Length: 117
Image (spheres, helix red, strand yellow):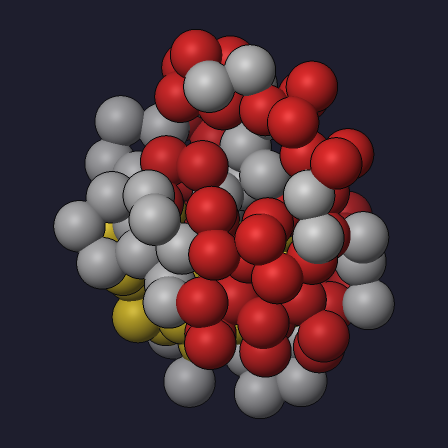
């Protein structure tokens, strides 16, 4: 089963959910603000994704900017970054789509098409 972490007010998340619905793909939607991924889950997703850890941060989010994370993250260990991401779902790039063997961050239709269809 596909799990997708979304934020209800996020326009990109809405587009991703609409796309999944149009393609008839079943998924479990999780509110990333209320039920954000744990440090253990984030570690698993990071390792499975093959992506740089910095891609997991919502760099356009208010919280990211308020905390001035662009300056702080380069000096943090991976463990510290994962612990930070696990403190607040609004720090995590969304939508975050999780399948048995793939992790997708953000919504790029062509990338999702390749991965899911």
